Length: 288
Image (spheres, rainbow, N blue to C red):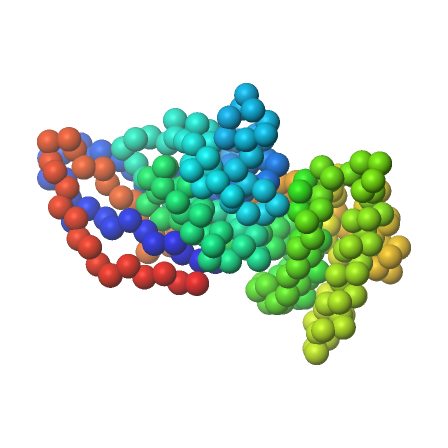
């Protein structure tokens, strides 16, 4: 899990006689997919499951494509429209964001640019693979092989001891299925990728994970064709995770609940209008 710089807290507390201006900072778990954006709020559960479009009147205004934020400003406009009104202006939220494993620093930088519109106190990122495993309630101490078939992107992950040991992506998803691209095409691409992972793995981790069976996540897991096709091609049991299209969001929500209990994540009090803020500017650190 990666911490993106928190905003510095206010160095001047409100006087003892003042009424508290905010309670604990609100928490939001966010899964920013190419097709749909999903959000979970602490104490309220899932509050969003909506198309990822900048303008709801224009289905072509898609700021996230194939696992990349191609339009940070458009993403910010979307997040402001969807979430800004749900966050009390006197508070700054703690946000946990799922990220494509191969998105790297570029994705996190673009995400931070977009999320700034929500005035976050802290942004934590969690690899989507880890989020899926947590959301599925899996034992992450054993090797896990996860296939996540989304609308526009398919990702294959190897997790060992809860960390991503190997990851690959295929620029195909369920929205690509038509008379030219079929379920078999995606299944073949996944099978070929897993074979390459087995060949390049100098350890037994990929083989051990495959022996444990494959976890199937994403909206593709809701389609009945993929599970038997992958099981036949990979010659191992394939098990769709519960609520596969929301598994990553559930994992991010679990991470949010754990982070909110951590003493290093403290609420940021809002400053009353008649008391200007005096800010400290410590050296900012980033953990990759």
